[in-house]
Amino acid sequence: MHIENFKIFSDLVESESFSRAAKLNGITQSAVSQQLRSMERHFNVLIVDRSQKQFRLTQEGKLLYDSSKDILHLYERLDCEMQEMRKVISGNIKISTIYSVGLHELPKYLKTFMQEFPSVNVHVEYRRSNHVYDDVLHNAVDLGIVAFPLKNRQLEIIPFKTDQLVVVTSSSHPLAGQSDVSVRELEGYDFVGFDKDIPTRKATDEIFREAKVTIDPKMEFDNIETVKRAVEINAGFAILPVSTIANEAKNGQICSIPFRKKNFTRPIALIHRKGRVLTPAMKQFVQLLTGDKFITNKKNGIVKNLKEVAGQSA
Figure 1 (cartoon, rainbow, N blue to C red):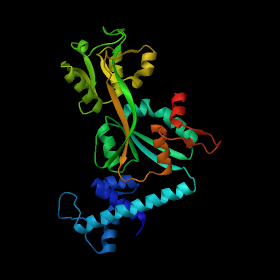
Figure 2 (cartoon, one colour):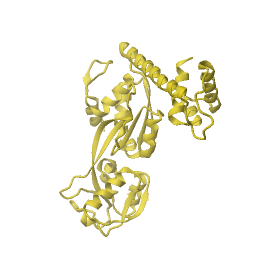
Figure 3 (cartoon, rainbow, N blue to C red):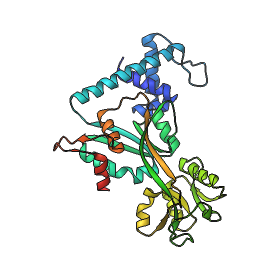
Figure 4 (cartoon, helix red, strand yellow):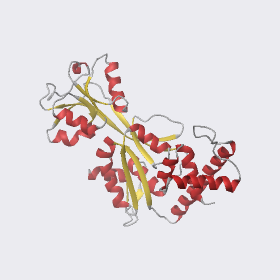
């Protein structure tokens, strides 16, 4: 029995999908089935109750899953401790992030991280918020990045940063050029928003609700780039994080207007499964984004705060 057997079995149980477990481990669905049968022969027990339509473990299967997680946890911790003893920072990091952060926040940090740790390969996937949570919970990625993080007993939430929300219009919109705007002044204007299930849209709806303002969206989109393009052609105003429209505002493509006497924000956080052992590379990446620790550059011995470096290079 190899450590890979326990990894494949754990992925199968957590995803409840042979195809998903196969994809996570880079093997065929048939190979996952063969691994399961091999484990059943090895322990001489039935692991999955095949009389049920839905995926369900037997009592022996539940015991094997719990033990598999313990074995994998010990192996991951041992591997990390060995890397730390050898002062090795290498390997792979898989990240699932919402579009706005992946496109507008991450690049400067990734550039700094890859310069400091060229032996680490970082793979980034751009996803809708609900898919980011699924990726993390099903161990498809190491870290997730979301806005307005939802509490979950299976997740560890690490604050990353907070964005200010502003009103965004085209340069020809009636509100363009104002130094600030109240929520009530927005009533009556066409609104371009995110789809209803996206956290920033939910926060926007709450802003209108608290101000007792009724606004029906003229257009709804699932990503920030499409929302910005709609604003540019004067389809309506939007409420967006100020960091995501910096280039367009600088070039005069759209106008950014702060709220009057109000400070609406969008919290962003890193998430990972509770109990997950972070490799030295993952720890360094988390420290880079949170800026809570100083990191030594082994090439020249300089100690510096990587978050500040990333900010300076932006």
